[in-house]
Image 1 (cartoon, rainbow, N blue to C red):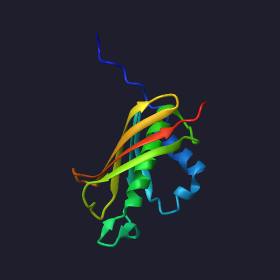
Image 2 (image 1 turned 180 degrees about the vertical axis):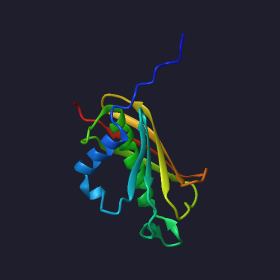
Image 3 (image 1 turned 90 degrees about the vertical axis):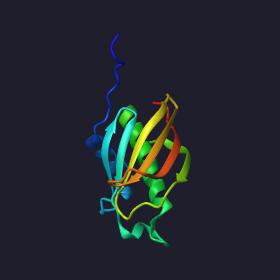
Image 4 (image 1 turned 45 degrees about the horizontal axis):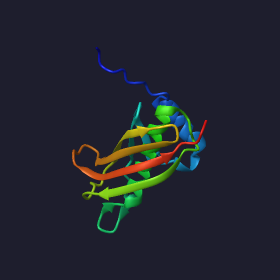
Length: 147
């Protein structure tokens, strides 16, 4: 008996980013502040390009920056796995801010734990670029509309 076959992503990184740019032009404000790094079946990696405007008092990258990044990573993993379901919506997000992120790009790695017909649940781990320590852990649930 061989290893289980893992399904392939149904959207490439380029297709996913093109869909996001078309459907959510306000996300891409001309600064290219976010980038889809990779997408696979049940996974996505998304980068937030560091900008000093993301800082809050005390010199840490703001929570809303990390929240938006985690939400985008979940959305990317879902769309990469089931296709362009742009009407999928967040129903829950929970965050644990673990340590102060460095003033550099943030990398979010998402893994979907459940992908059903109507709900998807995933984990997101955010790290400062080039560092091993997780700065934020998020869990999220999305509602997927019927096709």
